[in-house]
Structures are given as C-alpha cells and as structure tokens.
Image (cartoon, rainbow, N blue to C red):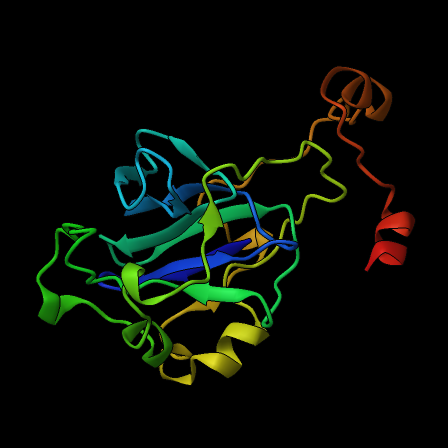
Length: 212
C-alpha cells in the first residue's frame, strides 16, 4: 500500500491479533520516516524492546515486521511516499494498538511532541502493561502465506476511523510515483518455483477474488 504524508504524522503502534496477525514489508519511495518495531510476545527475552530504523529514498532500506510485533512510523519530511505490503486483510475485530508514549518502551520519536500529528485513535491507545491482547512467547509464524496484499496504507477504513487525519493523508496512484518505472516483459512470477523453494502459494487473480 502507498500513501503520501507530511512531516510530523505519526501512526501506531499498530498490530492485529491471531488468527489475522500480519507481517508487513515497509519502505519509503520518496522522503524519509523513522520506523519502529516493538516485540509484544509476552515472556520473550526482548519483550517490550524496540528497534528504530530510518527508511528513506536514499538508503533504499526495507524493513520486515514479523507477526508478534507492533509497528509505527513518524514522518520526517513533507510529501513522503510510504509503501508497505501485508499478508493478511485488515480486521477491525482484531485490530489493536499500543500507546506511542509508553514510558517503559521509551521510544525517541526524534521530533518534539508539539510537532507530532496523531489520530484520536492513536492518542488513546493503552500502554503495554495495560492490555492482555498480546502474543505468547512461543508464538510461531506460519510460512503458509495464502495471499500477499499490495494495498493502500491509507484506505477508506482509515478515513472513517480517523477523520481528523483525512485531509493530511491521501492514497496515491501508481502513475504519481516520483520514480515511475515500466514493467519489464520478463518480470513474470514462476509460481511453481516459488511453491517448491519457499512453500508459498500465490493464487491467480481470479482465485484471489474467491479467497476474498
């Protein structure tokens, strides 16, 4: 999914519970963000610890957020284009969050608090020690990925839940990318090879619609 955001926007810390927990693969196409991942597997040695990584269009880094972790980012430049892929659909029933200002997690958001822009929803998230909606330390990820979703990070669902950010975050079209690239004629996915080497099933478009 792709979104165009301005400096100071902070989203998170977000995650979804099993059975619809999500992996996320995130990157920045234009601009820069600080991306944060927190271990919320209760009983794991690094429980409550976080990793903070700068993603920008110069270093071209990507970050994989595993299931069992919560995710957030803060935007460092105006007109930043942030993109990510997830392996499960959005579920309001299992959607959860942790407070961005939890003192025990102690994240340095780089920007001053008065420059941060959060939705009402994210301002009211509980601290880590105030929720039981977490993962267990023996939580094991499955490699059986049935669908990889290339979606928009800011959707109609977000717009309905967070109307106060509706005028600050907007989905962008592919042809609006800062570095558009044509698809090469040979960029075909070999489903059989992927299934054999990674045990990942990628459905055809028609099958994907049936999964939905």
